[in-house]
Image: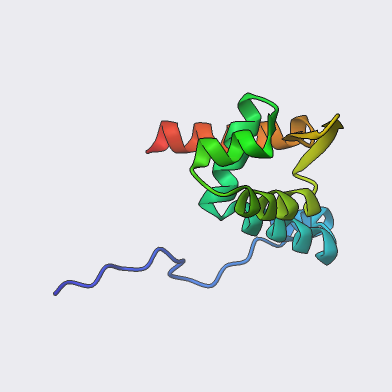
Amino acid sequence: MRRVKEEVCEIAYIDKRKVSSVKKKMKPETTMQRLAETFKVLGDSTRTKIIFALSQEELCVCDIANLLGATKSAVSHQLRILRNMRLVKYRKEGKIVFYSLDDEHITNLFNECLRHIEENG
């Protein structure tokens, strides 16, 4: 069996200028942790489906449950996680609670990821 050579440098070389430049731009650890948590939350296919649905239309819990073939309780649980990460927001109209994406950043993030997947297989 032939071994595939790893894609790493064959010599030890550090471009100190590049490393210094990136180090100055590096975000604080707390910011990087929050970013990692956001991607972790989006790593669940049910939550990803909810984000996709909400990128198309403002929906209530009943709408989302029907769309996904899930219970209202299960959808509410996932929406609570998304809300806690400030990925979705809600508004109440009478006895109905409507959910939407929190802001255009979430829409842009999701659409860019989706475009990447669709264009690159």
